[in-house]
Image (cartoon, rainbow, N blue to C red; front, side, top):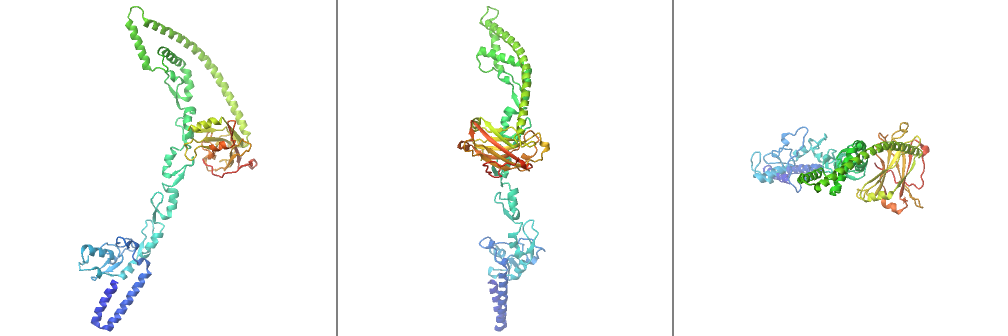
Length: 551
């Protein structure tokens, strides 16, 4: 409108000088030019005022990279950027509309270039410069993008550019729009993940914290180097680890020696006399003082000093009560020493006999193991595991202590793979699997490992048998996954990695059917190796839950 008024004013002056006809022709020409400029402006969608300028702070020039570089004639003298919504002054200078309007309001009605008087109503749009600038070639403003286009098409390109950044909805980091899905699934620190051992869900950045607390995570014993799950570590230290430090059996009587568990027998044999002497001192002090606990070395020293003082106070005079007590103590000590010598001889004889008994026990144990191995080879892939005294396991679980039980090994055939079962009773405080029976299958080192293909492949059917008249067994069927460590050839006696169900059966269901009979729970495992189709069976009333087993 300001352009039209300026043009109209100049045309009126021309009319006054040159006559009405000429003025009328010029006015028609000027109006035609204005209409053409208006139609051009309407055809260019990017030439309209940007949304950011409407109702917000005014924008300066275009801060983009031109290729080739921007000519100085299209540069705003105020913001030193490409002209945005270019306007001209009566003195012939070009500015961004927002820049010059702000300059007039802030510094006075003067042109910033030549200091000529300038009012806002004297500004008129420079549509020619505007079209020229919008036709210039620029580079995409997104880092990593090498595309070039006309300035008028820059906004449309930026919104669709694969290098445009958007905030990740999980971690709020700026991510390329084209890589957002990959970032959320592979790189985002806040992406949801689940533990392969206990199936608990958490965000990725908490993975290390969970690994340090997961009850099913594999850990290594710091003493013997054995690999086992974290729930078993404490009981392993207390009862099984051969290199765990333990106190002497006679620590109650004063022996302060600490040794590895496998060195205890040798210590007991080498220090028999010392142990008997410690026990004699304890019994003697107990008979004199009435202590129920073994006295400390300080207490024994104090007692001796007191006794010496009492003897010295009596001097060389007549015998006193202290002398009688001293004589009694000497006689008692002599009797104890005599008993110690006799017990030492008896202990040596017993140690010889114990060695013979231990040898017999080793032979019996070896025979039992051989018998179990022969029985395991006759299973032909179907093994029923009776867990006797199951109520004791339930009481331990109810007390908040984890219960982990391993079955004897069994073979899938002859020749065949050697496997075993592992049953967990989850504690009431366990996350996501409290009060559940967890059931897993482990591979073991067997006699035929060198003759078999590895990793183990096949179908495994796990069942807790209903011993009632309805015989509604709880059965799950799973397929092996050869890429997991649980099915690789074991390098130790039992593969520490198992495969099965963390939430196999809830303990409440045990009371709803006849799963426990005569305080015995029966667990059945049927294994069909994939290489031997003749061993495939179809179990009765077996409805698979699906291949959702986990490590």
